[in-house]
Length: 392
Ligand code: CMC
Image 1: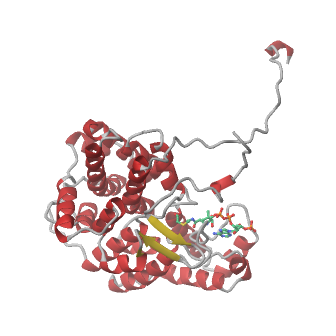
Image 2: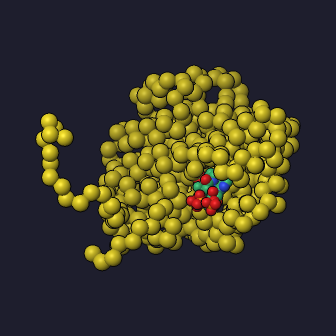
Image 3: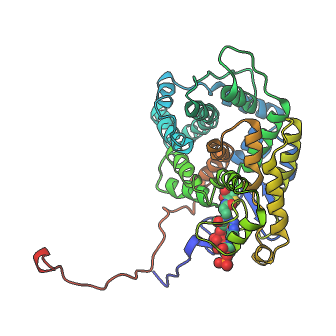
């Protein structure tokens, strides 16, 4: 078995070869299938990016249309599934509801479970992309105790997601085009990020030949932690707390730098980026545009800008190469759109779904794939004899 070395957090261990996403953390570069994230965010759509990530190339007009139609047609969920979604307590965290929903979805589609049958995998891919749009809106509805709406096939992916989330039943609802475009762009920015914690989880679950639903449900759970996708929710909590304590950004930063237990500048720092996260740059611009378009003047946005300003000029952050990551400004946009804090991470999961699916599929077809089974270095007791309880 050779020499085993410990690599906590897999800082220096590549688990696979991949053709999907390229990151240069020092230069702040992110590309999906070779295309710069900035170009995709500006010109593409979420479903087109999903197609690109999963199939490896940008679709032709007819391919894109067929894909969009297929996803659209599958957005309706079974009535029993709808009932199931309505049975969670109102104060349940939406991420727990969402991972349960993705796991439960597999029980309705047994014909889509075989990870080695290409038709089943394609069906599971479309079903998951389609129904995650419905599920995410239901997760929001159940947290409000509101009725669950049915999808409208005539609308686009993001537009109908917003309608199912925010419309009052039986009343006309037209989402603001600025909001539709901004959310579409945010979903694109979140769509993949190579071997992060949740994606590695999806791959390792799938490496045992578990089905796609089980694998992405595990990915949602990995994403829920505050050091990963849960950071967008944690940023807003942090900003609100600073505001409630009088809005003194410098005093808070002192606590961060003093490394008070549990106090970090949330939304800052990244394992791979040692430069400005290119997604954060894009999101920051969007935050200005969306808040202006919605006529919202958010004090918390000013506070966030103030924290960033301090950090970018402070030796603690500069010497450690800590810059804003994708989560620093997203929560402020989601809040302006009308989402509650607990919905921020489910929105991240909605966006990340194409990446998880693409990575799982790549792994299943990769001849190098083996079951994920890291080694350990044992540091416990050497052999000792069992002692009867009365003699201990
Ligand atoms: N605030 C204050 N100090 C920090 C921060 C922060 N946000 N991030 C890292 N540091 C310090 C850390 O204390 C350590 O200092 P020292 O060398 O003196 O011990 C140094 O910077 C390196 O940090 P690390 O924890 O060893 O780095 P890591 O690669 O293990 O962790 C991270 C990366 C993202 C978990 C971490 O930067 C962090 O906790 N950030 C805040 C949470 C966050 O925003 N997460 C979202 C990540 S991006 C998108 C996503 O995955 O959802």
